[in-house]
Length: 421
Image (cartoon, rainbow, N blue to C red; front, side, top):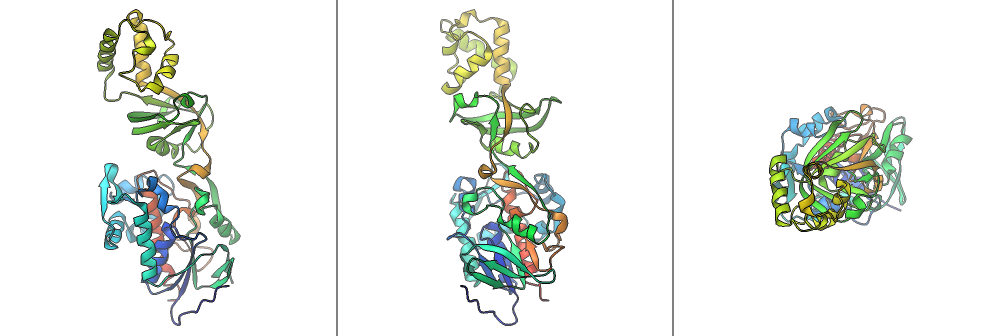
């Protein structure tokens, strides 16, 4: 059982969740004079944060407000006040002020110079401790209410009395780190609406086994289009890296594409990969003719090694419809045209998304219409605040989702500390 001694004349704020949003909320509440109790079910703070960005932690995106909001497909207007409270420049200054030097990479993505996500998590945890935040390693079970006001938290170790409660439990992605949807349940118990949750920034499942034949193959500098087959129009276009897996497609371009495919069903979408985006059809044809001249006495299947990775040759030849043993010098102009088309538009039919447990973030969450965007306080329950992924706000890859966590948490923490004023 916890025995927490209240500090006279100071509001007490309980933060549920010790991830990126929870720690930032605790810091801002403590900086604003509150006594802060941080309830984290894991034995270590920032467990999910420590593995983000493949352990490198893309913590924000160094861009202006308009560009930032253009990368938020779900409820971007809700974030105006939060970004005013803490924008990407503020976030960068905050961490550099804590002794974590940062760098800006392609696409304005911001990382610690060390490429260590632990440095970001440790900086937040150390700042919490320096401000006197009480860290309690316990699982919150429910939020206590009295006359439509949050008055504390019931945990596995006993009740925690509070003047304000900040719910920062994350979503349902990476459940092994503690994000198992508990926050949604607690919000529902208090009368909040939770928009149906589903995966976002997640790998895509293929219809068929084309990708499985190339499992483990990573392609760099490809151009990707995901096309709605009914309309023939692209719903997403990107340039970068892609990975073939036993179930389908992954990699940065695919994760970003998934955020545009909430209604994906088998036969609705197709991934179209330009394997040689730097070459026009004319230049590629010249290159192909050059290779065919060089390997004129080889079988077709043995003449593509200069243009394709080894794992891709057999599936490529199969899709071309050309006999793999046909001599290169016998390939017709029409067959060469088909080969060029395949290089410029390698098609992978899509069937669906991988499970939410494999998603980087969760789409859906607490309905933002029930939350005051200027304070992050519930419109239904006085003294209840929300921060981070538990809210129905999500963005594309590039550091935008962590910035949303920091911005909403900063606003929530600051206002929760003023609850008794």
